[in-house]
Length: 482
Ligand code: GCO
Image (cartoon, rainbow, N blue to C red; front, side):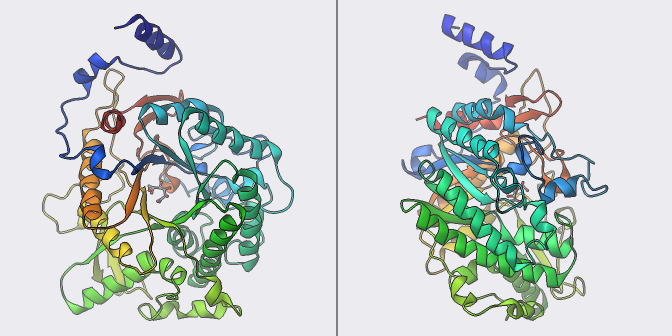
């Protein structure tokens, strides 16, 4: 061990970070077979990164002037979070952002994707700014640039200001107006430093889970509220793109979608029709309006009521020519015709109930199905008007255990290797996929699941807030070394 390494290791260990010198790597990074490809196979301009979300990592929920979000309210409501936790502390990223960004650099990642907590910069959702909140994101951006990591910002990752929810939330068209005010403010504030922007994170997830199923904030269970929230979200999706492009002319403007690979349980018409309805909701509902195709309500007639919420000119307002779309795929769905739930008449079979031989299941009860990301990349690339695709999220939650201060998460490393092989397969087929961002940097607050599911490349000790790069993170460090 060089004197420099000794001092550095001592310093970092003292600081609570455990770093092992290179020679020790072989001892704990158990031989993981090479994936059969190299970083170079993806192209020198292919970007590698990690993705996060404000509510899941920041903590400091009521610090320095931040207003409450619907996720603060939701996690403070008894019975909403399975582990009875809140995101009040999460990973305390608000205070540890520098050392966390150092870990991104340590893993040789190019990109840090994070979201802005709307109520940290506009505590009431509109109107008066919170300068301390604005300054926090300047500090994050500046440190990223200082260490050579690209900041990629998601404008909205589910944490609506509670003040707007109190006025009706996304089902109220005024929230669309408020979103435009927020998007305008932050892109003007940070646009000189940040050139890569995403408008929304997974609109289907937060509109459906939050307004129809009630599993996520704000916990509503109403098809009508879902349809209104969906339409105002879709308007915000496109208008957000226009606002970014107007305020940051040299920006790379995108938005992200949750994308499911969907198979019918059997190749029978009733199951195929059920799978088509699920595909229309999970995959088509937000991308097709952007492309001028309108909502896929011919496939789901029960959602035709969304048209009632149009105002003159909305058809046109829904469209925008994004520079890229973010694909976020984790698993595949196996669907069968069902009398429940109404409107969909389709049942997504939980992974632990799927009639699949040798199925591998993550801690989210999701089937590991690498070919699914190939299939969704091909599916979304086939839409006319899609210029570029980035995998803005992909990863897996497996149970992690500390052994001698390390996390030998072979399953997660193999997950990444197998999914990346499918991304490369799609790229070789001609899909213009130009980046891949792991979900996620570090174990964090997994919404209604609390901190139980660990998705991180970095282990988070939620008691001490120490971080330990898992073997999967060390694998990326080696794989990405230029
Ligand atoms: C999502 C969200 C992330 C989740 C991740 C794992 O895609 O659902 O963007 O916030 O934490 O996907 O569920």
